[in-house]
Every structure is written in C-alpha cells, then in structure tokens.
Image 1: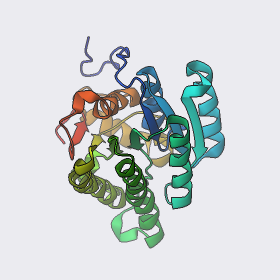
Image 2: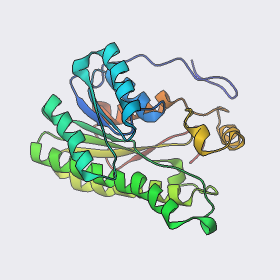
Image 3: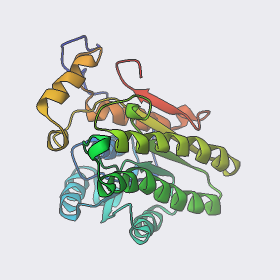
Amino acid sequence: MSSVEGSGPPPYVPAHDLLSGRGAVITAAAGTGIGGATARRFLEEGASVVLGDAHARRLEHNVAALAREFGERRVAGVPCDVTDDTQIAALLDLAEARHGTLDILVNNAGLGGTAELADMSDDQWHKVVDTTLNGTFRCTRAALRRMRASGTGGVVVNNASVLGWRAQRGQAHYAAAKAGVMALTRCAALEAAAYGVRVNAVSPSLAAHPHLATVTTPELLAELAGREAFGRAAEPWEVANVIVFLASGYSSYMTGETVAVSSQRA
C-alpha cells in the first residue's frame, strides 16, 4: 500500500533482521526526529545501539525508554557534543566497550536556522557549520581511525539534505554545510574503501517532527510539504529505513553515494 498525494503516510514497515548482531553509534538520537527514529529502527532490526546527544536529560529519558522496550544490554547512551573531540571519543569508547568493535556510525547531528545571508552574523554561520559539517568530520575521522585499526570493516552513514543540492532563501549556512557533508562522504569513501569501510549519506527533503516548528514557521512548512509529490513531509522512520538499508549488507556495493529521500526531484 502506498501513499498518494494528500493522504497520510503508509503503514509502518515491519523489521527484517537486517542488522542482527551489529553495534551502532548514532549521534543526535535523543529526540523525535530522524536520529530517534533511526535508533528505534536499528533496534527493531537487531542491532545494539549507543546513542549520543548534546541534550543530556532528553538523552537519558530516551535511552531508558528504549532499554525498557528492547533490553538494557542493547541500549546505552552518553551525552555528546559533536564539536568536542573528547566527548566524541567517550561516545565511541562506550560503543567499543559494549560491542567489542565499532560496526556502524550514523552521523545525524546537525544544527539549522534561518537568516538572510546579508544579515547573517559570523556566529550564526559558524554555529551551523561547526555542528553540521565539522561535527560530521570529527565523528567520521574518529570512527575511521578505529575501524581501520580493528581490521573488521564498518559502515558510516551521514545525514545530508537536499539543500546540499537545492537553493532555499535563508539557508546559506545550512545548505553550504550539507553540501560539504556530501563532498566529505565522497572523499572519505574513497579513502576508507582500502580497509573495508563504506561511507554513504542520505539526503532528506522534509521530515516531519516537532523540533521543526521551533526553527521555522508553519507557513513555510506547509509550503514545503505542498511541493512534495505526496503532499506531505516524510515521517522520520521513512528516512530511517533508508539509513538501515545503507548500514546493512543490502548496500554492500555502495560507497560514496548520497541517496535522496524525497518525493520530488532534488
């Protein structure tokens, strides 16, 4: 059953045990957006997860809820600001301590905002770029060093955006950062292939979650949803499904790719 223009989302897709026995790290995974949906989908697909998020209290609540549902042995978390190498190292240390190796890294952390370029401050620019692009760089660098040393391969999945390809007013900082994530993905993939690590990215257009309302207006969200072929935003789990695919063996010949998760031409 598929959704048609103006209708709601399709039924939730059942799990197929695609990540059984794998250990994953997911950044910015404490909320109701793509990171939180990815954590749940990974657990449903059989993975164990270590979650990071800059919001410590929200992270603690989410980890506890998932642990009650999926078991404490499969879920852990540690506060992590991806602009801080020490916190990134602590996140990956926890994953290796629990799983033995680091199998999968999902770089979901990002920071948005709206500002016309002529009125944008240096601080606005740097905050978005440092979290969204530099944070992805820092986490990927740390993970690749460990994956290379382990000799067991691994997978990195980055969260980009169609704004890395497409222009939108007020989004110069975010669009530039996401285009950088795409370029970083391609270059890292070429380098990491030598030690059996794949690096890919998803590029969502619009995913519906409550946090969006705090960084934009209802009018803009309605306008953006209206541009989609299905007349709606994606559910976060619909993006998470593609992240699961890229993390799984079903995408074994894919690396350096950015997959658009969109119902319109990017």
